[in-house]
Length: 95
Image (cartoon, rainbow, N blue to C red; front, side):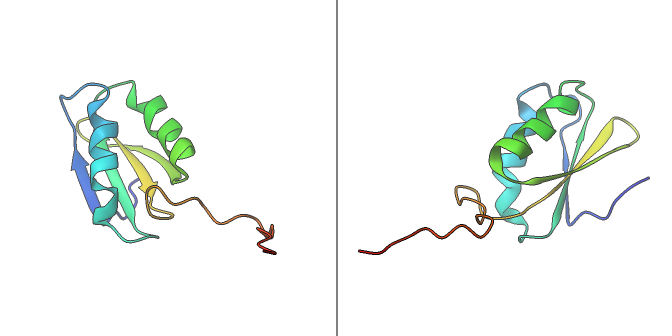
């Protein structure tokens, strides 16, 4: 099963942390809401990609077999460095 991706990063043959470095480097190449596929044959990517998404506030969509390797799908939620919108909490600012 594959998912549509606006950008595919081929990191085959490259070991940790290369797949994550490439993902971070190219995140701004897609618009918020668009999807990046990271194709990797490094077993560490199965843990690294979801963990990176959680740390950076991006959406991990899952993985699918790719020949060769595995494709890991990430939806860009917001700009890197920006914090995700809070869940309705008022920031105050009464000064």
